[in-house]
Figure 1 (cartoon, one colour):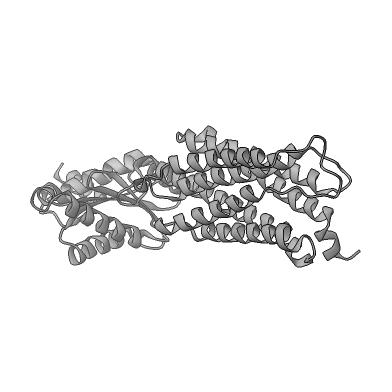
Figure 2: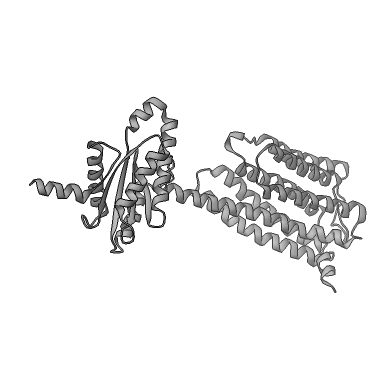
Length: 390
């Protein structure tokens, strides 16, 4: 027996369904974690309910694949109905996940499609009721109305994605499933198992389809994790570290027992900028200053937002002098933006705790602010001056 013969026989369906079930179990695990971890319970509940339906359908497909087993016609009907309903639900979930909230994806059309599945199954049975007993071994029971409706549903959902900015992987998954439906129909109603490549296609395409769905869900989980992590450490407006995480970064730098410095920047006349140009313009300027601060400390330290228009940086001071970096920041802000900044600098020679160094840099910045603005002041300079005055 060749590999092609093996894959086109009952063992091919077993291989296909087993692979799909493994993928679905991984997806179910992720969906449960999403349901437990996030507030949007509704959509994850739909996902968690759809996956067991697909697993049940795949188990039934395995049972139906082996010609030696005589099964009730209801098993055939149940497998067909489960496939259509689970496909509708799973695609509602992914369209909901990957469609922007403002698009307002409506659940009613999907509910109508599910209800139509049940109605068509009832009509199919009314027109051609099952004969008592099991389907003879080796026979295939088909439901033309349901099979063709499944193709229509797939086509409708595929067309519906053209009106939304959907992920390219998702569109590819629908195309794969549409081809699978066409190959299944062609095999059942036209060629009836005479074309090996068509049977092979109907066995392999579901694996590809659910692999793509798994990758889509995996991407979604990774995006959520990254988003959650970033929101806990990064300021949403400037992209700099928030105050708490900046303190953590600075503490790690201080623990290395190397020369380090804190640079404290405050934008001059920021309230006036807000009042005269509006918050949108002021926020844009704040982002520009933040980007300059990030660029100038890249590779030697970290930058953060202390609060309002106050920005911070911590840096190693063994290879480059902090006053040179601070002056470069001040000069670039003056040249590249419509504002200036007052800057204060402290080093770990003046303090041994992060909060103490921030306080000292703040004092140095305040000295810059009160003695003309748009300048850099080292804390050691004002400390030496105060000692001399005594």
